[in-house]
Length: 563
Image (cartoon, rainbow, N blue to C red; front, side, top):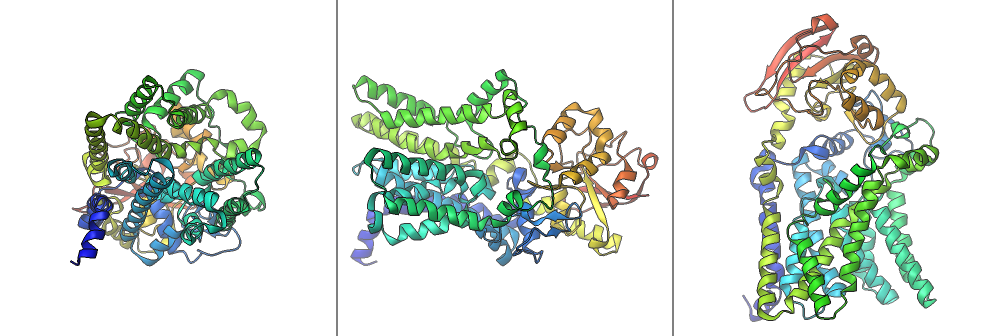
């Protein structure tokens, strides 16, 4: 190695160390391949399959909201990802597990370098130790992100860095800032998170204008460009929402404001301490105590940590906004203003993790100034937080939870044998699933009447409800869940509750299944794929055709024919 190369390596050794740890964090995807354990909820039970079926549909690009026959006998195209979603094209170019691994890698390294650039350029002082800048960035990159969110959360620090660079340097902003500005939207979700992020950035521009009377056209243009790209990317979703009346979405009947005041108050503190399943920041055990300690130390030394205190209060406010969005007191207003019902304004909580880690860096900077004790404490805290997050990698977390691997979950050989037994083209008949997620059947090429999607025709939801009405009547909890939300069009069983994964080692029979098989036949249902035996099958017009198992599959599938 040349002396110059060695000098460059030593100067950036902290960054290299962070990259190596991230590669180790990501290594289970490469080592295990399809035998890796990954998240099921809002991942294998939905998004992965959405990408796969769309990649294979031949309807990636369409100017109108066409129907895709693989689900509910005609799922609107607008219910699936945009044709300009970069993650979708990974599934077009690669096998699903490879696409997933690449997406994870992009997400983690963007989070790492985005937070590092933001901290070093705008948040902490130049003399701040790499223990803080690299350590906090590494911790942020290892968060248990919702996998299908891509850069929806993980990319926010990079986006903030870009906007602050353009705000500061205007026309002299480096070219890479403008390039990143245009690339980020293709990897992020506008409706879930960036609509709120851009609203905050727009508010910052407005405050600047009011304070300084300076228009800052470059900053405004940057906001307009990113917003415009997002709107272009999601053209089909936007036209279906505002300009296309070909179907009424089931979201028109959402009733998400059912929590009491007491429950909303509890939920606010739960979110503040532990976050939401889609935006966990793992802040309760180290980050929040460190922030509180840093605020107290600063006040003791007659300093005013106004940014740290502001960020801390901001996340507290976001948690209360999120929780009280589901308060029952909102419902009358939501019923009178449609957009309050169909659009979830509580999702502003997706901004929590970047705020927590920026505040964490500021707090560690205060501790670092406590000479030897403070420096040692900061090192210990960084190592502890990173170690806590490292063991939350999907393979460790979900193997411990005993969930199926990617290969086991979809069990392609098992479902191929079922198709071979039926002996017809899958588009000639429709199936539903009991005791397992319908996306498993969809992944394997079956056409299903049940599904899990963000939007579908309200009329179909009503028709499907007739099939499961008897089971919903047995369970007020399931009835409320289906009627007030209903995104999961599942064959609900009162005995099962919200458990949708019954394996061959846990498949107690259903003693009295109360479904309307006539309504199922009217919708086109021919077969039921059940993970458990149905004891009263003949009484309700079902005939057991065959039982299917595979040694390497966790499922035992009972194939019932609807007579």
